[in-house]
Length: 156
View (cartoon, rainbow, N blue to C red):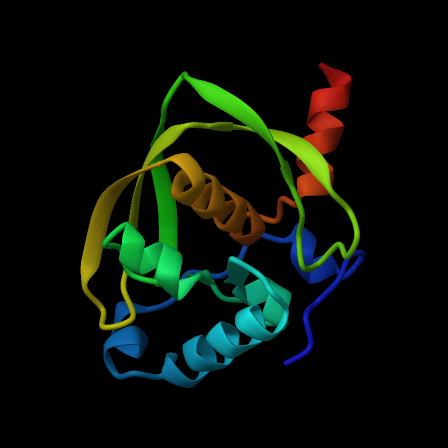
């Protein structure tokens, strides 16, 4: 699976929500599996569907990171419902922007709701590196890259 790179317009577009029936029927299992493989092959910690040339609201995260935090590694139709006021700034890279690293300010803690790959609704709290990864991948599904985030910082 080829990773979609900027300036591909799909990376600047809000992704389409996925019908719960399609999830429960397992119609996305092949895509989730392919995305997991592509993420690992490209040394990523997360991969959004638009980075895999799919206009779908889904991302996967590193299996070890998910296991360490007792969360699923696939998030469908995710929505961050709460951001902590407390934030930090850490350098981030992106598979869609090879060789580009930039400090990005993000909330230290978030609350997120989504659907897992079995069609179950999930709500969870995340902090630290997990919260950062979930924010980065949710940004992708909303058509926002770290280049957009770094441009916001330079304007302020």
